[in-house]
Amino acid sequence: MSDFYLGCDASKGYADFVLTDHQKQIVESNFQLDDTCSGHRKLEQVLQSFFEKNPEAVLYAAVESTGGYENNWFHAFKMLGVRFPVKVARLNPDGVNHHKKAALKRNSTDKISALTIAEYQINYSEVIRYDEQDRYHGMKKLFTAYRMLKKIRTQLLNQLESLIYTAHPQLVKYRKDNTPLWLLRLLNLYPNAESLANAAVEDVDNIPFITSRRAAVLIEEAASSVASAADKQTKVLIRLLTSQVLDLDRSIRTLEKEADDFADVHEVKLIRSIQSIGIMSAIGLFIQLNGNISLFAKSKKLSAY
Picture 1 (tube, rainbow, N blue to C red):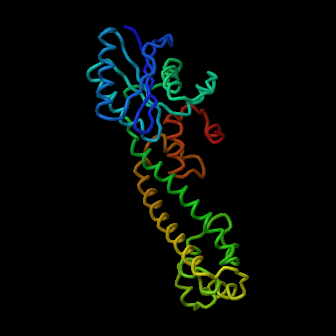
Picture 2: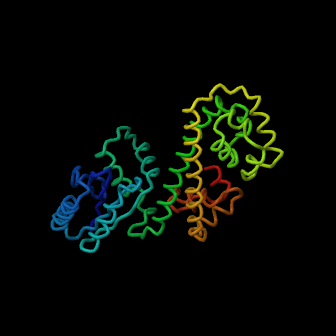
Picture 3: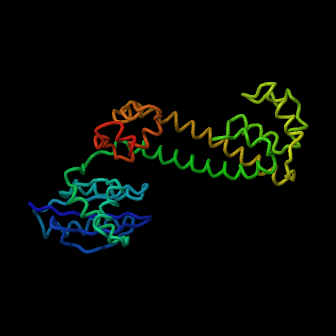
C-alpha cells in the first residue's frame, strides 16, 4: 500500500492541485478546476483514473483554511472518501506559510502553494488529523464575523474622531482610549457644539450615564467651545457615523452572546482561565492554534505567543 499526497490551494471560484508520492516526487503536475459542479466531477474523474493506475494507493488530501473558499473542496473530498481511499484534512495556514518560508519558496503562485500543501502533509504527518469532523465550524464563522464588525467599528470611529476635533473639540478629552456609549448618544443628538450649547440640562440628563451635574458641565463647555465646524454636512456625517457605530455595537453584543454556546469547550475554558482573557479572545486564540493548545506547556508561554 502506497501513500500519495494531494495539495489543494483554494481560491475564489477555483482551486489548484498538485499530487505527489511520499518522496515528494510529482505524480500529477498542477491542474486547476473551477469550484462548480463540472469542476467537482472532473476532480472525481482525475481520482478515478489515478486509483485505476494505483489500486493499492491511499490518498491524503489537504486544504488550507482560507476564510471559507476551501469548504466546498473539503466537502467534496469527504464525499469522494466514501468511494475511494481518500483522507482529507484542513490545515492551519500559518503552519503552511512557515513551512514555505523554511523551504525558501519566496514566490507565491497557486501552483507553488498547492505543492507546498502536499509537502507539508509529508513533513508533518504526525500532527495532521485526517477525516476529523469540523465541530467548530460555527465557532469560526462567528469569530470571523465578530472580527469583521470590530474592524469596521474602528474605521468608523477613526472617521468620527476627525469630525469631533472640528465640531466638538471640547469633547475630545472624554474619548481617552475609547468612545463611551453616553458620548456616542450625545453626539447623535447634538452633533455640534452650537446644538449642545442650546440644549436643556434635563434633555441631556435623559441620556443614560449622564448625570445632571455632567449635563450642566457639557452644556457650559459647549457654549465656550472653539469649534470651527457648524455646517449641515458635518452634522449629518456625525449623526450617520454615530448611528452606524451604535448599530454595530448591538450586533457585536449579539455575537458575544452567541459565543457563550462555546464557553464549555474544554480548550476554550482552559484559555479563559488565564487572567483578563474573555470569551471572544479565547475563541480567537483557539482558532489561531487550530484547537491544539497542547503546543504550550504553560500559560505563560501561551501569553507570550
